Image 1 (cartoon, chains in turn purple, yellow):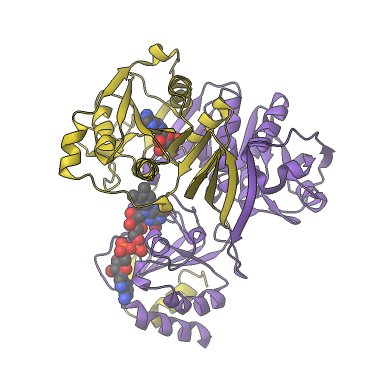
Image 2 (cartoon, rainbow over the protein chains, first blue to last red):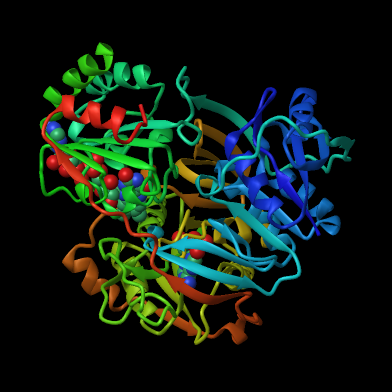
Length: 311
Length: 249
Ligand SMILES: Cc1cc2nc3c(=O)[nH]c(=O)nc-3n(C[C@H](O)[C@H](O)[C@H](O)COP(=O)(O)OP(=O)(O)OC[C@H]3O[C@@H](n4cnc5c(N)ncnc54)[C@H](O)[C@@H]3O)c2cc1C
Ligand SMILES: Nc1ncnc2c1ncn2[C@@H]1O[C@H](COP(=O)(O)O)[C@@H](O)[C@H]1O
């Protein structure tokens, strides 16, 4: 049985969620990966070094620039004959492309798996993670997205897969990339960070997020946010943690001025250690926090910065 | 231009669902049901396009049990013109919904279908992409802004690193993200008016679709429970606990 995993990459780095998707695929048998893009020698080489991967399919063509769903789905469908399981991490690209692949193959996709039971059976969260469903697929091929936070990523090195070119499919005449507005940050990515510090509506405005910055820097943490903080424009959309944002499971998650709505918990409750700082002692976030501090964040954050700088 | 908007009846987002003791599913009897929040956003967007004179008709479609008619009424009260209810006794998974929607698109010939990015019950995030595939249409998923001009649509999407904008030809599929708009509340007069708007009812077989689920639900379990931990008295105590007890910093 061979799986094919569509990888997310940037330059010569295979994204951590994709390494988790490879880890999930390894539970099913042999793993091939697909890198698609333009001028991707470095990514293909990096992919060939992923632990456990035996073959890299490289689709190098301008057609795959910007990971448009239409040509990428066609590419995966063209390769489906040789693979029983087609997987990708539940990233923006994976979620965009894989269901399209599934429909073209007349398959019901299995979204956001958190566990592999056997070749047909998987566990996935439903209702914002308030229930875990075990589902068995009757489709001959499985099209899967993987909840990266639930699988330890494979090592970025140690493998020595062969690299094979794949013929590009036709360019899309229906969709065109126009522009992107990407937030730049020196900090680790939310879904890969060992520590995440998130702010909520309690932060009151975007400027106050600067109180979090030195703490995040000191801890080497990524900065996240609740939906309320994003909707209010305090921080960009890609900071959102939750049911409909990013799912994170760092070693340490610090929630500041976040009440702990079901939809937010859905994105962070698998973190190893949770800290909550909130002035309302009845805030639901305290029900999942290992360490709760009932305090006004505007006094707590400067104190926290000073305390971290001490040792 | 006609716009089709599928609206799903789901457990209200404020309800914390409970897993049934026998592990066959979650408790839905006696639980408040509402329109999937993303679908409210889609209806709002479609109605705004109609108010701007871009769209001519907004059709709300819901699929599932007979009570989905209530969800359609909500959409009609928000400003949709008419409804279609596809009644099905079997559970409809995204592949079946996408096939049924394709049959309706073939019939109604809309230029745009706006779906929710995700249904908050099954959390699949799949139906829109699947419908686009079945129709051979372009897709603009996770949209936070759309603009229609001539025979095209520009879609700004929420992606992992920020935002990106795509230009799609019409007809097209859009799936709405949370920040596309803020849906209105239906006014009382509009709720009254909605009662008179037509809802057509049909069955999957009328549309030539076999809705048999491909995924069997084996069991449903509670997620691992987190214990509430302890309260700390000060920032200093917090930092010291994180260093020496939890050893995470
Ligand atoms: C379909 C749908 C999807 C959603 N998806 C998500 C999602 O992915 N992620 C997400 O986060 N939410 C999501 N939500 C929204 C969610 O329901 C909540 O509304 C949101 O998480 C609330 O954010 P918050 O905790 O920052 O704000 P609030 O609930 O307003 O909480 C603010 C908290 O800050 C505290 N506070 C205020 N001032 C201070 C101070 N000075 N010092 C200390 N504490 C203070 C208050 O006590 C309060 O507990 C979704 C909702 C829907 C309907
Ligand atoms: N039974 C249904 N009736 C109407 N619309 C649906 C149904 N199931 C899914 N949809 C649409 O598909 C979107 C995504 O659902 P899902 O792929 O299940 O997460 C929803 O927001 C709805 O717009």
